[in-house]
Amino acid sequence: MVGVKDRVVVVTGAGGGLGREYAMLLAREGARVVVNDLGGARDGSGESTAMADQVVREIREAGGDAVASYDSVDTEEGARAIIGTAVAEYGGVHGIVNNAGILRDRAFHKMTAEDWEAVLRVHLFGSYHVTSAAWPYFREQRYGRVVMAASTSGLFGNFGQANYGSAKAGLVGLVNTLAIEGSKHNITANAVAPMAATRMTEDVAPPEMLAKLPPEQVAPLVGYLLTEECTDTGMTLVAGGGTYYRVQPFQSAGLRFEQTPSMDDVAAQWHTITDMTDATPGVNPVG
Ligand code: NAI
Image (tube, rainbow, N blue to C red):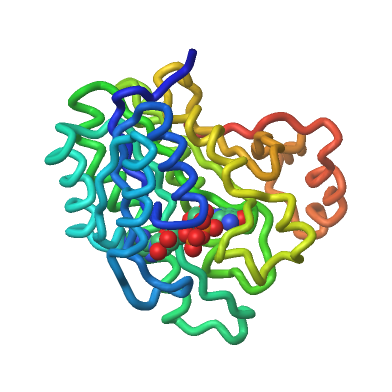
């Protein structure tokens, strides 16, 4: 049986929605869970200890082991404090789920620099800070599991989500490099793009669709990625409504010009360059 028993796992943004489901499942499976949540509103305003406390209470009532953390992921000090809670309470950290997130949707022509920064700060910088704080422990113990909350918005784009999609695509980029750098230390990093009915999606998708996307259906995939048995790394997966699949970039066969082409040459060959008929999984030519 695959498992997370006695593993110390930090779930950021675990005071509600998907993070709560991740924390509850991990605790049921015997992990010791740091339930981190700033306790703010969907747009990132405000804060409260109530959300994290409530989830910790529920986990303990069900016989699980959890501790609350209220620090924000979006600063280096906050992230250090979150990982510090795991180390102080449970003596270490084995896995992290970078799940905390906010939303400031706006069409690009109306988006302010503040909307842009606020979203990147929590999702991309926050995931960086928390992972960076945990990384020395992972290297030292030669074991670590990192899961990033990505999004189909980052993979495919979505109207009004230039800030959010950029942050989420950035996390896929971060996973790609962490997978390479972590491999010799037995550290894996994977990205999960969830689809679930939460406060984040309540007015983004139609109610009939949301009814088919209970957040608990995403949790087993995230849980599996946190087990020692799962050694796959650098993957991006989509999970929602009981459907799980992997997404990966492919590259066309393309063509090679013997001499520097003119723009007209490019135009003439455009179809061949972009034709995906014989596409193969993408590789980094300098990797
Ligand atoms: P949610 O709004 O219920 O959960 C996000 C949690 O993060 C909240 O509890 C919030 O208080 C917390 N949070 C926000 N800023 C924080 C900070 N600076 N420090 C610590 N905690 C903070 O939304 P949901 O849907 O559960 O989202 C979880 C993750 O999954 C997010 O990263 C989201 O972008 C991602 N996601 C969700 C999708 C969905 O269909 N629900 C789709 C794609 C991605």
